[in-house]
Length: 175
Image 1 (cartoon, rainbow, N blue to C red):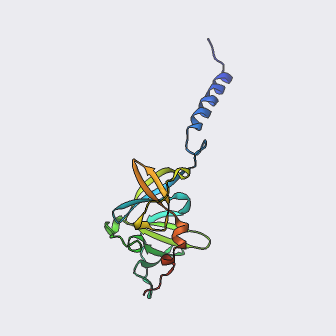
Image 2 (cartoon, rainbow, N blue to C red):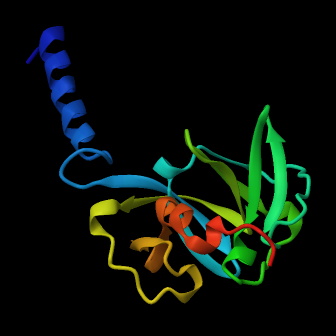
Image 3 (cartoon, helix red, strand yellow):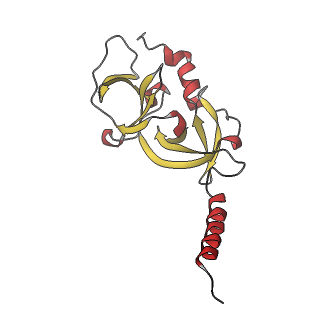
């Protein structure tokens, strides 16, 4: 039985539509990409929607009179970013060599900063509708949107809005 080109194209369109329905972002779930990072021997996530980029730690200039977890300010392509050592902010011991550390950059109209983490692990897909309530997450207290199941592990999802609203985070003056 001979198939004409129009039939072949129609069959191909049906197969492509079926495969596209299986891709993330289709259907009822609220799948999102998240960056997995290590901090003080713990792994956490941050939604890619809250991040502008990930970069190496740039050279920075210390700022007098600020708390110990503010590393200084860096000029990144003409933009000034305060750099925050997240391990020190959360009172964790950094377990990474300086060359493995990375910056998760936040660039919003009202806020620009770099969150220095021990290591970026990679991208993970999480379902934002399926986050479990935050555990008693003592290390990231008050800054967790919920807990996500990733690679058979339950990981905290850092919420940048909660972090930026955190009283301690906003009090950068040295005591």
